[in-house]
Length: 193
Image 1: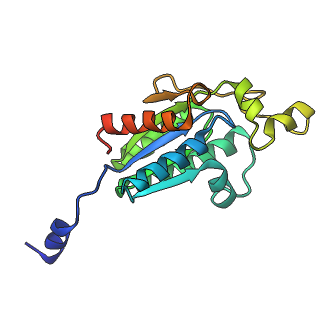
Image 2: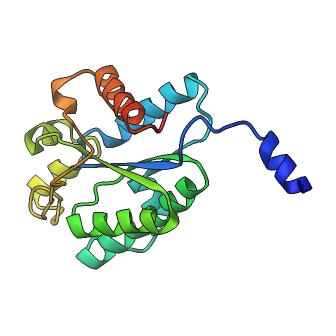
Image 3: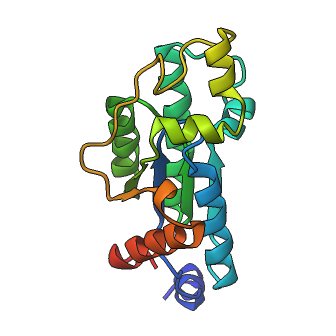
């Protein structure tokens, strides 16, 4: 046995398989809130290799300069997907909260994971546009109504819901803790935790 083999054999087993949980849904659906709460819950239980990738934050740093054309949105989503797949390939549990409105682009993200041997669980945060508009966390719906903004996903730009997600979370019908528990149950059922 080589020194490297001995070192690898002495490493503790990871508490989960590298996986990306891809939370997709409309703006203000609750994706980031849910991902943040799930990460805190998992870390409190000793799962240390958890990373959050928020679509808005990644856009600011990794995709700065991109607009909101179809091509730019796809580029942003695929960049986030590549980072998520790379982290997951190395045993990290990635919680990605990304609007990602187009089904074929999300399929591209799934392929990135498959090519790296990482798992990908697509979760639809299925909050109706009326509820998202009331929440309006970033003021986008108000700007769209006033004419300051066009191309808002789910209003005057398309959103293609996943046809066969690993889970559908309805944040408007349950408390945050219930949504977190639902995702934890999914992770347990999938053998991630």
